[in-house]
Image 1 (cartoon, rainbow, N blue to C red):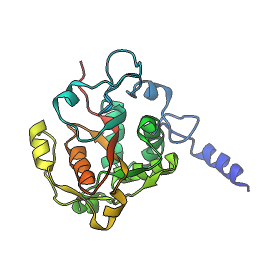
Image 2: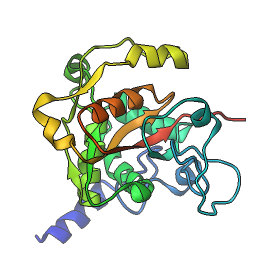
Image 3: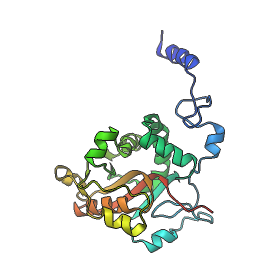
Image 4: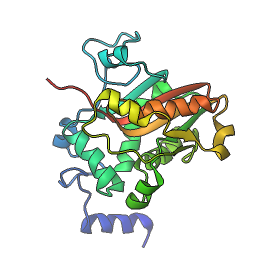
Amino acid sequence: MTLVSFQTALQLIYPPRCILCGTQVESEFGLCGPCWRDTAFISGLSCHLCGVPLPGEDEGETVTCDDCLRIARPWSAGRAAMLYHENGRKLVLALKHGDRQEIVRPAVLWLAHAARPLVSADTLIAPVPLHWTRMLRRRYNQSALLTNGLSRRLDTGHCPDLLQRNVRTLPLEGQGFDERFQSLSGTISVKPARANLAQGKTILLVDDVMTSGATLAAATMACYAAGAEDVRILVLARVAKHP
């Protein structure tokens, strides 16, 4: 039996399902029509530092959201693929805590689309790290799974263990902006054995979700401390206010 015949037979037995609701779909690792329509993908005018969507038309000008005007961002540019809301939240939580690693495949496509204005010839992609104790419990770093696929998709440099968490911080849920930044300050560094990879590079930091930006700020400062020339950020989902 040829590979094509085998795959056809397999699809007859196990037809592709929507990764969110389980409805039968035409191709694997995708969303059905209703789930796609109800997922808040970000397009059009957005903040150039965090990617949150903004009202108005995209006329190619650099615009900044209220949060990024109020909070000094150490990175130079940022994008997000979707909002952390309803379906976006479900997808992130399923990947992060539900061991739904099949979500990585479509997520990489969404991230690659969002990353287009951020990637240059010398870009090095790196994930935001987990503390080793959380890595031991979870068994994988969801951000590293995303960067592994993204680097192949964009054909750019990749260092999955560029950064390390030196301190296991308390969960950030429920903490305010100031508390989050204080809790995470100085907790991330570039691994000494990888420091030469950061020097003079443009680094694209990737995480699953951005809330306050405190974790990404700590990771960015670690990259600059190791000699990076520029740091940009990319997240699968961005927390934003809803009316």
